[in-house]
Length: 447
Ligand SMILES: Nc1ncnc2c1ncn2[C@@H]1O[C@H](COP(=O)(O)OP(=O)(O)O)[C@@H](O)[C@H]1O
Ligand SMILES: [Mg+2]
Image (cartoon, rainbow, N blue to C red; front, side, top):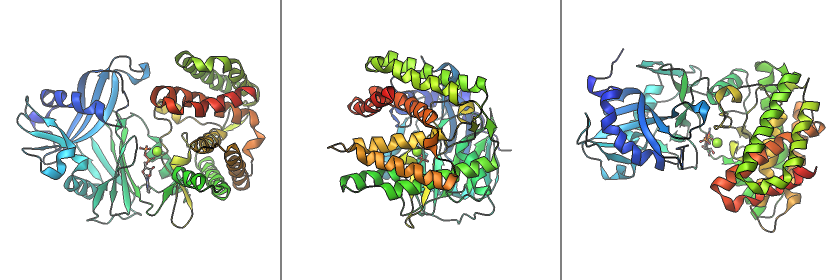
């Protein structure tokens, strides 16, 4: 087993890297701990992936981190080390090391280096191990060599490399230890023959210090457009979106049916529904404390959650997408809808994300998304969203055999939970958008 050279041990490397990361890491879009100062770094693992390229898991210690996060979030970095950075790589600069074993060297984000990206794909083509890293692949999905890489510029919470317009490698940035549903569920769905989800072709995991999924390679759906962009275009052109919404409902139902066939379906007991409702109440409480505009609506919203304890017991629960919205769907050139990004809500612990849940939770997420899309345009056309919501539910009902509208209490509770989350998010990050979820809150509090 290759061992890191003595100079590349976590302890030795820290003085070289910590000052650079202090400046660079909090500026990255995928850095989840914005607004809280980083108090220190520790290196969870260091592997020399290629000569001059280090694979790192780095813990950023921060005050006020969520208690379940432990001492701080862990991030995955691929860092290149060179004497001088060639001009095309200037935007990838992390910094110049002035201490430790890398003293005098230039450190950069190696995912932006096409040479490294190309070698990474080569490494992914054969299963095996490298130190704590485990490379796996599906022998039935051959990955050709020599595909040209490009880093995706899309707004996202991870980093993705597209290879020759045929494969996309999602490199997770914030690492959660445990089974990551973004590899788990697409693998299950692919093995079950569900074609709605791009099938994982290769992946990188680690088993030290604990299990974690680090990257997933999937077929790249070229000529595809995401549902959010398509919906906004329809709105701008003053077109309806019901045909698309109907097809999206079908696609969602197909994914749910496949997940229910392939993985356990449980019946929610009294205790579980009480927990479910309690968690919703808790999130509302926290949101209302942070965003006092919510306060007048709290009693109405609480009623929506209380209904869960009355109706949810004895309902089936199964694995779901967990963070379904228009931006997590792609329409291919051929007109088919695909569903991507099964990570769930990144802010919630993995164990919670992997729990069986009523499938209407995903439906509620998509319904909120139609509302959001409609609200981006003035004059606001509530009937646009309303028609999409109906078409989506009809499409879902046709393919699933059960209509989400037959569970109005659960649907309302999940929509409310989502809207409350949106209020908190918008208040913190995009105050201009706060009116969008607040409109939903007013409606949901009255229902
Ligand atoms: N298989 C794919 N084919 C084409 N584009 C994709 C594919 N997977 C992801 N993308 C693009 O990458 C973006 C981010 O992917 P996603 O898995 O949602 O990552 P994140 O967790 O960072 O949101 C998507 O919105 C889409 O534009
Ligand atoms: Mg996404």
